[in-house]
Image 1: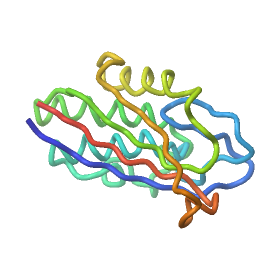
Image 2: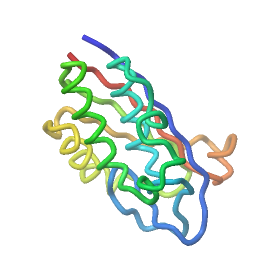
Image 3: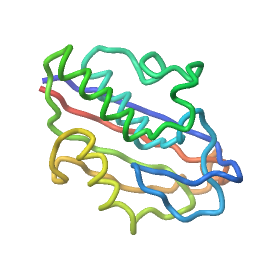
Length: 156
């Protein structure tokens, strides 16, 4: 069994859609980034790659490569996972994900996010847990400047 931890954060910016866990969430701003800036999918991707000892999302999908401009992070997660299965011969067991944001509240979108992450990892929804937490108005998250996500993934 192999455990990986992933973390990602992005700043808010106007004029972009907010995508979290592969789900478009109504909000006044989206997140800045080279791809769709989905911090949830990025954190899970880093956790999967970390558990397999295969680096991180930036090494596999560099932001200097124009082919990843505005790419779906759920697609990138699926590609990374398929590479882990092929190269490291490891299978996904489960993921536990925490989204840190003052706004928007994600409770209404958690089930759909779980479905998208599970699908990308060729698994069932019961193997993916997602919860939202505020940062109690502390730091960049508390000031509403961005969103972060932390993920733990188990592979075997």
